Length: 165
Image (cartoon, rainbow, N blue to C red; front, side, top):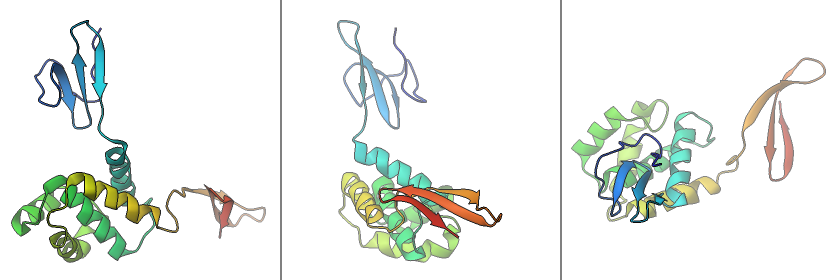
């Protein structure tokens, strides 16, 4: 039995892999000559970059506005390619990378202008490099209360349990 990966379009022809019968933005399902199903997934760096893109938009990635604009410019380079002001503005109107994106638009475009020639894979790698250097990267906050009822935030990191007041 052949099953699709993600929101694929089962039954359509895909150019990702020979024999592919379903594709999505992150994978491909093909059925080989022996009736075996193969799933072709993108490199892990792309999947991590997608997760960071979502974390950035949902404000789970704690960083400065300048760093957020730099991350957004690398994500833009990976999705759109080299800088083209009209195309970039249209893409940024249709998609949001950072909260309150209108305020950061100038910084995103200025940073994207400097990334000419960078491949999507290089851009994804740069997103990972920037994120891993952030002090709060990988830390998820959870609301809690202490014994006196004061609101605190708990987080687990590689160094142990962190308590923030």
